[in-house]
Image 1 (cartoon, rainbow, N blue to C red):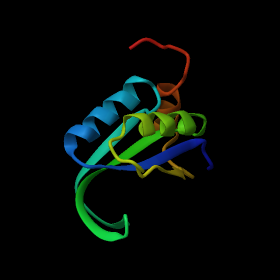
Image 2: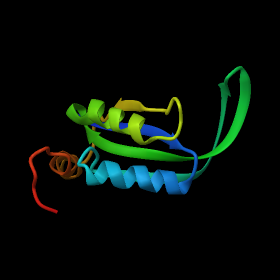
Image 3: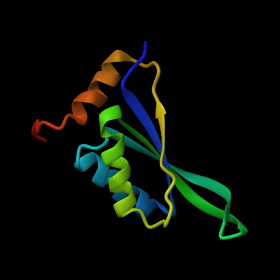
Image 4: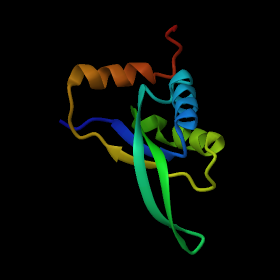
Length: 112
């Protein structure tokens, strides 16, 4: 079963930033759900040096049509100069859950 749902990966510098971003994305109906996974250590090259940082990973569930607006909003809110924003297709899943994701990010106002 192929779906139009997407999983966005995004790292954040700390829990407060992660919570703020998650609440904004869900509140603005860009995401149905955001899971925060603390305790990550990222090793990466930045400005010519190898960096090691503790981060929080966001697992963001949305639909294909909301990926670009969501990515733009992340760029606006995120403290990193170049935030990680990776979109992966969800190729299969529980149909009731995937329907819920679609309903939550519907651009037509549905009430709270």
